[in-house]
Image (tube, rainbow, N blue to C red):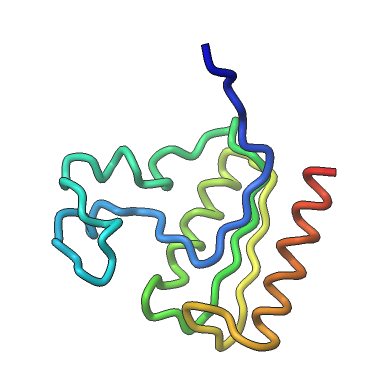
Length: 119
């Protein structure tokens, strides 16, 4: 039998958390979202949050028009409800895909999070 590994820590940049409205759209831009609608609940992170989840850091820009910041806000709320060690950093004015100082800030936060929870 293969060994079972558990995720020890997570950092998510601008995560889509509910894939149900995105499923079965035959997207050419996002082919990873081309799956049957009946599978969407099984791959929507917001529907699977529980107290066993690993420490999770969410980083999201306030001006993200591709994946609205409300996704991270909903997920941090669910993580907090289940008392999962978690944090949320919103980057003022940042869109989807961090640049310049925002990229530096997100990278530093990511490395600090992994150092804290993995070392």
